[in-house]
Amino acid sequence: MPVIRTSEGSMKAGNRPEWSGVTAAGVFRVSTEGGRFDCHYHDCHEYWLIYKGKAKVVTEGQAFYVKPGDIVCTMAGDEHDMTEIYEDLEAFYFEDTTPEGGRTGHLHKTPEKAEGHNVPALPLPLDFPE
Image (cartoon, rainbow, N blue to C red; front, side, top):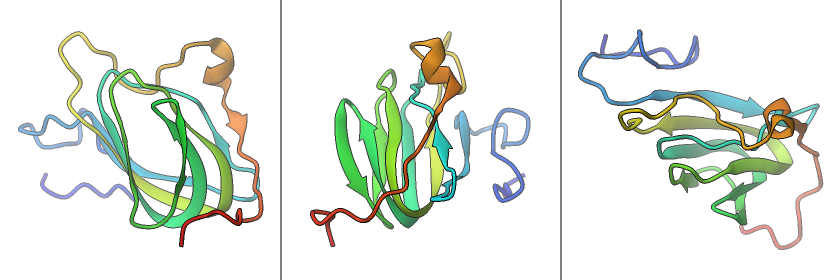
């Protein structure tokens, strides 16, 4: 199965090539009309390729503005989150190989973080990069 239709569902164990070490990959969206997200981490590295929209994210303890063409790179074990959205956002995510004994999926440091939160839709900040 060399083609995975992530528009229909995430790539993960059971629907990826046997030779692939990728833990998961797919598309996620956060809307300015009631978007939600959860502060989480993984036992593997994760990458987000932003291809639509603008937002503020937190990774490795720092806040960053993101826009189309940006790749957010988060090391295994580091929490990451989306804290503000300025335009509807769409991104492709890629979870690297999970080490032996590692857990898959979103992991949370507290039950409150597992519940997720609303992502406020705000006007584009004046200091947002062009």
